[in-house]
Amino acid sequence: MGDIGEAFAAAIRLVVGLDRSLIEIVLLSFQVNLSAVAAATVLGLPAGAALALVQFPGRRAAIVLANALMGLPPVVVGLIVYLLLSRAGPFGVFGLLFTPTAMIVAQVILVTPIIAALTRQILEDLWQEYEEQLRSLGAGPGRAMGALLWDGRYSLTTVVLAGFGRASAEVGAVMIVGGNIDHVTRIMTTAIALEVSKGDLALALGLGIVLILLSVGVNTLVLVMREAMQREQG
Amino acid sequence: MGEATILPLELDRVSFVVGGAPLISDVSCTLAAGPRTVILGPNGAGKSLLLRLCHGFLQPTSGRVLWHGANGVDPLRFQAMVFQRPVMLRRSAAANILYALKLRGIPRPERERITADVLGRTGLARLADKPARVLSVGEQQRLALARAWALKPQVLFLDEPTASLDPAATFAVEGIVNAIRAGGTCIVMTTHDLAQARRMADEVMFLHHGRLLEKTPAASFFAAPASEPARAFLKGELSW
Image (cartoon, rainbow over all chains, first blue to last red; front, side, top):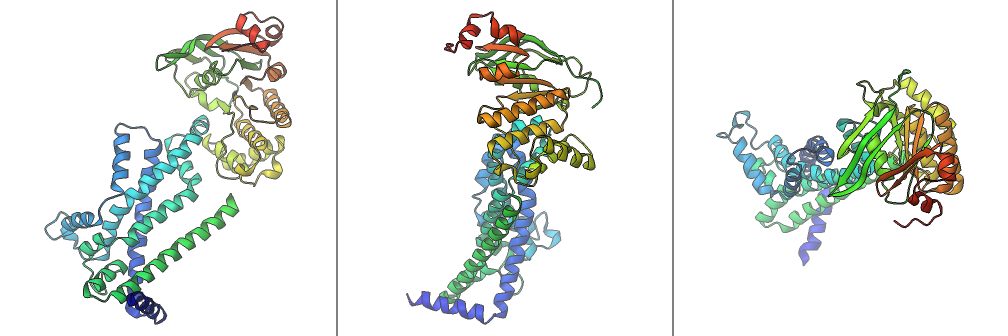
């Protein structure tokens, strides 16, 4: 298992050497993943809140669907977005295929159901506690959703982190719609896949270690911020 | 809120049935401003359910809940309710009250003033900035009362407001309820605590198996209850 030791050496060389192409890949990864998670959060939080407390026909089916979509296979999403964005597809005129925007679109589709479904679960539990009090105070569904999202904010950071985890870990969708083009659409996971297929396992593993460290860093940062906020506001 | 009152409240042959089981059966009565009404009865008599039917949380299976003075306005805007377990939003004590006032459309400077006022009256001024959920249960219930008080309701429903409190906290809650009443709010509360009913009731509604057996002035209820279950309940012998 000399590969492992070599991988760590490669990882350290990559980080310490501030390898220019590594930095480029890391920055693009963050840009794509964070944009996708931000958009998915804007879409998923209200959708989850609505599922939690608005009664409408087909609500149970919608909840089952949201839960099921959490497990969407990235390659399938990638393929669908590819078909939609390709020259012959309905959105072909925008010329988005093989751009970071296409990668963001695909990841929004992957992450939104995760954020919506987990938000629904958390806010539904909170609604059990709050419903009578908020109705008594005269809060309509819109106001109630706002109160639930605000009061559930600490638990919801974990939901957003789960979405970020999904976005930063998947390779299937971004590979298909991005194409892993050097300097254009190459991000951490697609670079790892490429190095594996080229047989440079040490470099691949080195990149993997960097990816994991970055993920731990993001989660630590969020946890620290959340605890600071919690201390202040309770 | 004006001088107009949504009272009197009339329950007209109100029944509430769940899965074929009648939980409230054929209750008719009228509640007017003035006396503190205590709804008394053993566990499972339907006290909380009746309160929720009055407050509009539940629609009766049959019969009607009528606010005769409402004249087209939403009667809920002139009511407040305090629950057995206080429901505290995850924000500061003061913010809990400010939020309730915001929902009622009170302008911001007014909100600040009212909040400081009711926190002072309930002895919570020094806890204003504390997160509401770290307060003791007794303090939380006082905060729930302060929040209700801030809304200046015409009718305040209280569902077993002291059931999970110790005697000192119970005493504080009863004092606040009486102070709210002194401001002209009609008080309707449930309890299964006879001693509390003797202290707080001007009028007693006695419920048993979802039926309203008595609605009489408190003095005559405690001196000479008219129904057999009420006599047994007062002697602590009611098995349900």
